[in-house]
Image (tube, rainbow, N blue to C red; front, top):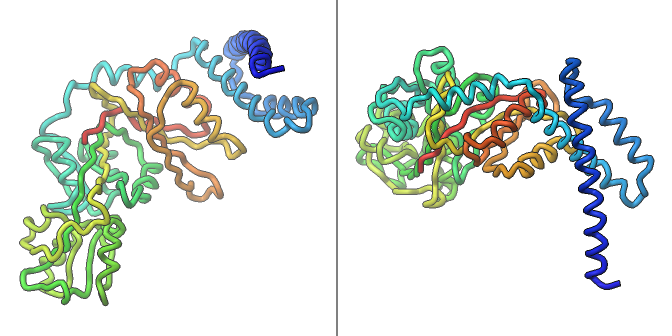
Length: 380
């Protein structure tokens, strides 16, 4: 036999597989209808476990590692098909549709916004990217921003989520598990860090440098080149600049932005000291209520998955099957639950996609914990 003969043989087998797959999915639909009529859950983990064991008993030894994967995907597809043919409406998907229809066409010009830090902070610069004339209320920490939004003290909050060089702001991801909110917009802000000090200071005379831990990471190469200098993390880059300005000392400096230099009357001992010129921080704008503005082409989700082999793979394969591009996957340990994680997903898909709406409805029913964080667009 030559290659063409083998390919024709594969084609004949595939045709049989396709016919059997269609038959299986049709029976799965009927099972879904029966479960819905009798108030039964779509997923039956014990039935799936017993099925895998039964199939393994009849599988040739050389194929045993592949068989569970094949049938796990079949189970996932069957459940998805059952959900899609169900007449039961998802409260969440209806909420999303209502938000698409009823949200104003543009963000407000002059809302109340909570930001972490003090005047001159990067959060303020991001806030002014989102809104023309925001009423900014500065908070002492990231959790205070979430609380201000959650309690209705401010309509929006602005939070840094990740940096192109230093990575994710882990504290924010941990707080996202504790608070209820929705993302309404995001922006990527170019960040330049300068070494700022009081007039009269010299680079050789600096003995302490203050800044936020992310700015310290982003400028690690420059800092490593300073001799006999102690690097001290603090709450915010602008807070560091303010502290230096109020200290009266010429032996300390802050890693902060040009905005902070102007705000607090400092001088720059070294400009653009970040490790790379391609240094961007992504900020999100959050609200208490779900708002979806025109052009929303990114969706963020958080979920916990079963603590079992292949659970993340099955989730990713579902995204792939629906043609949904994944921009970001982040995991954070769940406090007080050993070796269990919360997964954060950014999906690069318009909220108007029927596949996305159906997927959200399914995930809400199938995940141990699922939170839809919003659909939005991102400014650059």
